[in-house]
Each structure stands twice: as structure tokens, then as C-alpha cells.
Length: 513
Image (cartoon, rainbow, N blue to C red; front, side, top):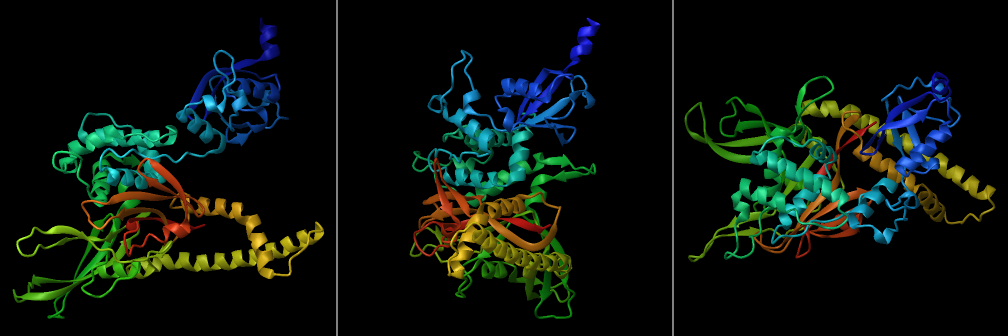
């Protein structure tokens, strides 16, 4: 018996693959790596050539000696790699064909094979597009998405129920493969905020404001997103992601000698004022500028008289994600005995793909941003020089391969950029969604989500979510229907008629490595 154990040296490992955990998997330490990979192929349905086996942070190589890895009974190792259909068998031993899979199985398989999550929508339950669009925009905030999915809360309070219902919706959006009704989330939202449950003539639900829904969801789940960071400090995820601090200065315009009042105000969005007292606002930058300056009347502490004051706000702390609300809805007073109505401003207001907030920041913050901005200029010059060298090498490779080189310089550059496109998309996405706090901040943000409203009235019309996917590719979520879109189409959502127009903009902070 002892001789047999010495010959085989069998131990049992714990195998982690994606979200799966397989316990008590045998491995012969005197056997080959290939034999172990065959065991994993049978267990996980991942072909040997696609397996990547991580042991203590290093990849296992086929020529390594298993007996020298100091593996222990019960030790966990991680396996990565895409499954293949021809290895996915039914219990009866029959091959599974793609047409036999459910939409949910197809979605899971595609995610495992290519890391692609099928974009699916949420079914409208009767004027609930405002909620569907809000959820799809929130889901694009990767850090919040992952936290909510992986941190179910204990308890029966309505806030806990809404958090867990949102967690369920986020998970189903990844694995369902087909649209579904977020009925549980909607019913809990109605319990918490009965105003959303109002009906039109006791029939269908009334249309509601997406901004109100979005902010209510954040407000409800915020207390449930506390966590302990690596330094053991208590943090709040929602605040870290969305909270913006504004340094507010109030000055008496009639009595210059009155001391200024300076305070810090906090919020979760910037406003873009469109109705600017007959002074047209044409861009997001102009609208934000108007929102950060206002005149107000108040009684002075010096002479107890009413005076005109000027309130100026500057950004004191930048959030990870910036929400901008285009203030398109306002209350229009009724005339000749008619009731007032909530009206909509249709004006064309352009917004940028990359938003620079430097000029809106307080001097103290600008000083911090300057280092990142200078480094960014240096990096851009280095990248331009590198691209020039790569272009020259591209021309030489064309000559060496015997391929004809077009005389048109623009055509050569077009071929060169086409060759680099996939690499650039990956680098762009990696840079855009890399973990915050590891690079220098510049004050620049990139657009990753637009919530639009179409229609001429606030209490009707339709909401949709346009969400960044990869590179210049976006996904339009029109309730249960989804469509692929390009960045050029996103930049057309500026309003000016009956077309879909931006109402809520989601930007992600850029950092320079």
C-alpha cells in the first residue's frame, strides 16, 4: 500500500473555473501535466490547448514537474479558458447542438467562450421605460454593477429588498439571453415610492421622470454600499462613484466689504441649464457654466436689509462618474384659468465625447490636475512619435512582402490604421475602464451613457438608454429591443426637434498611466 502511494502520490485539489468551484479533484504528483490537463478537460469541458492553469500566481507549463510544486491537499488552483460545444455533453452522452440550447444557455456559453455578454433589454410593463432606461445606465457603472451582484443583503426592509431586486436584475441581464420583466424590482420601487405607481384614469401607469427614478435608486441603495478598503477604512461606494463636492462662494453685490461666505456643498450630478433668460445655450459647457453661477436675494447680517448676492460654485472634488442632467423640463403656468403643465425645452444642446472640467474646478484642485495634464501632453507626443515609427515600419513590411504600395499617402495611412484598429480598441477600453486611483487625474471625462427622452411633453413620450459597449460601438436599449449604434449616432442625440434627445449624460473619469 505504501509502495502504491509512493508511486502515485495522489492528492485532491479544489478547482476554480469562472464562478464554479470543484472540490476533491485528484491529481497524481508523479504524473505529467498533460495527464492532469486531460482530467480538467473531462471535468470542465475546456480543451487542453485553451487551458491556462494558475498555481500561486504563476501559469503552469507542460514541461514542469508536478512533484516539485509543493501542492497540498485541498489547495485551490484557478483554471481559465473557453469551453467548446463539442465537449459539452448531455448526461445521456449526446452532443448538445446550439439550436437545442435555451437563450440563457446560449448567453452563458457565449460569455464563457468569448467573454461577450449578449445585450438584452427589459420589457416595458406599462410606461416603465423611465425605470428600464435608468437601470441600463446604472449597469454601465462597472464597480456598482459588480458590488450589487456580489453582495446580497440580509433583512426584510424595503431598502434591502430593492437592493437585492436590483442585484437579481443585473444578474439576469447577463445570463437570460432574452428580455424579461423586472416585475419584482418594479413592485418594490412602488412600495418605496408610491408616486411612481400612479395610474392614468385608473388604467395604465403614468409616465414618470427618469431623473427622479435614477436618484431615488441611488439614494435607497447608498447606505447599503459601505465596505472596508485595503487599509481597513470604512468607505461608501455610491459616494465614491458619484458624489461631487462644490466650493460655494456667496458675495454681497451691494456691500463689497461684507465678508464672503464659503462652504462645501455635495451632490450627485451637475446641471446643464438650457432656459437661460433669453440668452441661448448651445452646448453642455455653456449650460454647466450658467448652473454654477446665480443671483439671489437675502438679508445682510450687516444692515439687516435685503441685497443682491452672487453665488459662484467651483468643483472641489471630482467623482469617478459624472452625471449631467440636461434641464429640459419646467413648469409652465396656465393662462385664462387653465391648469399649469410640465413642459419640455426641445432646444439643440451639443455635448462632447470627452468633457474637460478643468475650467470649472477650484484653484486648489486645478493645481493638482496640472501634473496629470502636463504628463498627458508628454504621453501624446510620445505616442505620435511611436506611431510615426510604426507607420514607416508598416511601409517597409509592405515592400518586403512584395505588395504594391499606393501612391496616395492617405490610402497608406488608412491601411495602417485598419491594421491597428483592434489593438487600439482594446487599449482604449482597457484605459477607459481601468481601476481608478492608479493613474494621474486630468479633469477629463469620457461619455459612456446617454439616457434620452423623445416627445414634446414631460408626462408622456418615451425614455431609452444608449450605452457604450466597446471602442466606438454602443448599444441602444429601447425597453426589450436592443440595437447596435456608432458613436456618430450618439453625438446626434442633442435635441432640436422630435428626435431622441439627451436628458441624462454619464461620463467616466479618465486617468493617465
